[in-house]
Length: 387
Image 1 (cartoon, one colour):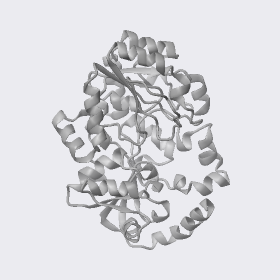
Image 2 (image 1 turned 30 degrees about the vertical axis):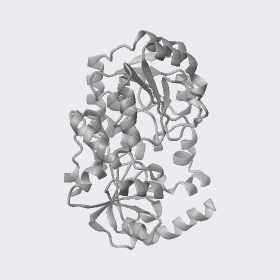
Image 3 (image 1 turned 120 degrees about the horizontal axis):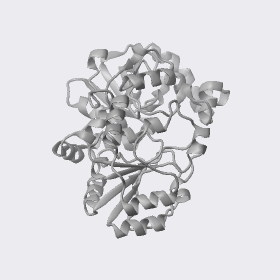
Image 4 (image 1 turned 90 degrees about the horizontal axis):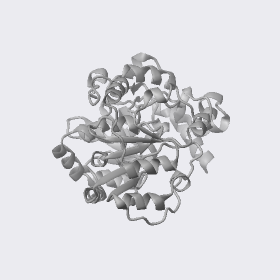
């Protein structure tokens, strides 16, 4: 069935070039049919304007969610959704044309908003791991089941000069197709509390407000957001003693949120009063401003978190040697990060017991300029695309 589904897409794709597209119609979509990322925030903003925008998803649940917010959405497999995908001149996506549907992308101007700055090798820049077969070796299996990987974006947000150089190699695109501007999702991190509360009330589920209220009942909140490993290990259970963590957190009236990557396998972690597992599909960005300490590793969320004043960072890099073998970095890791390093669980536990150290202000300032440029949350690229 999977083979036949992709065969159908290959048969449809050439005809998608024949449908005339309207410059006034803009389609948005996200990875796995979700409603999140840069596409979500830009879609919400543009929905209040005079442009004809719609969210297209392969998930009926997502379509219902977006419609419940008073916004336009269509199921891409419906006649109306398919026609809208074919008629939209601009596709604004978080990663690949499969965010909407690759088969309908012929003739569309694809604007990849992407989902994170950073230094990890990806796409055509990888040297090892499963993605090597897709982008470098281009095996038949990987090529057949991932045609969206070879549909290069017409434009890509690259944030800064440093990131432009990085993403030109990652996607094998020229500088003329890179748009230097901030990420739409970043504004929720640095806007006023009044603006954030208004957004949460209008566009986030009730569970987000409930979690924020829960956070406010603790003296301090930590959030652990590890990156995805190619091996998809159950990193919470395998590399953390949650019982000891809970005891340390309880003594400080602190909460630890565990936010897995959408691709990460998470088993049964048990019940701990001071540790909470978040839904991997939940939008964490409206929640991040209410946390105090980020625990991460090689994830690009580090650079997002640094945009907020007064936050602390612990880099839990217990598997650095293994991770480099699996994925590798395009630039030296230590030169491009900041925060307190914990090389094993005991050091992570000590950081909680003793309190995380403040981020070096000069290092923070330097990294923000390097990865985000002089205007980190300025993402007006309408002049480039006549949107």
